[in-house]
Length: 279
Image (cartoon, rainbow, N blue to C red; front, side, top):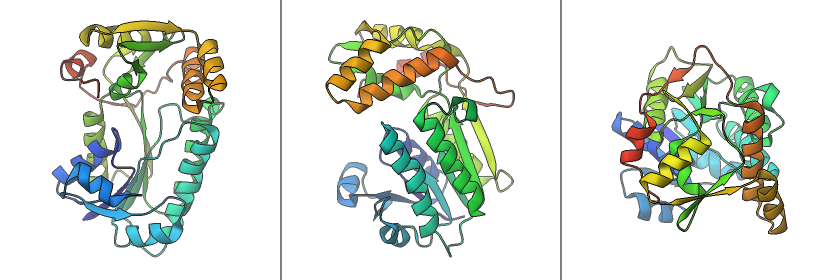
């Protein structure tokens, strides 16, 4: 395997994976809708190719010659989850027809199980996974728990917005540890056609994590009931806020699924916190 294309490789979770691939000796393509903007932010160490998930022809050209493909799709609403995960995966697979792909991987979630499909992201990530399985290509589905790097997204000026009770333990992991696991899995030819749940080393509730993060960065924590967050999101037509409130309610109901053979990362929350930023 020589050339790996990363779709969604410019953000907080995709970029560490792309950088780890590069560190491990792969030629890395960043598939992006705006390669000029991506290059200006990330420099010239990557090969930037322009494509749109909804445009199969552009994907076909950008992915031509790829030996590996890593999909880092996201969303914030029912429509965006379906479009990015299901339609996007379907288009990628069609664009890869005839290519000699040794492995295709996708980021999913630790909650991607049928019993949790009341959440649209879980449901559509499961459907995307089924598309990978049906394609006949060697695949990997990475199922991380919560990323520590998501905590700054709850900041509003000098406050962290804590939605819901959020008292159930979460096994937090950081993006760097996750990226290392992804790259090692791609390099291991015996690690194929598998789901890989990935949890951090310790269970810490969202509330505890927010309090510790806020204390470290000298922020205040503001409590917001889930129902009120949902109401405010709908009132302001903020689909992302509605989705986050629903996610908090989901975790309060279900908690984190126990998985006996989970892959464990090593960085503790406190170790990550020492070098964390608000950006």
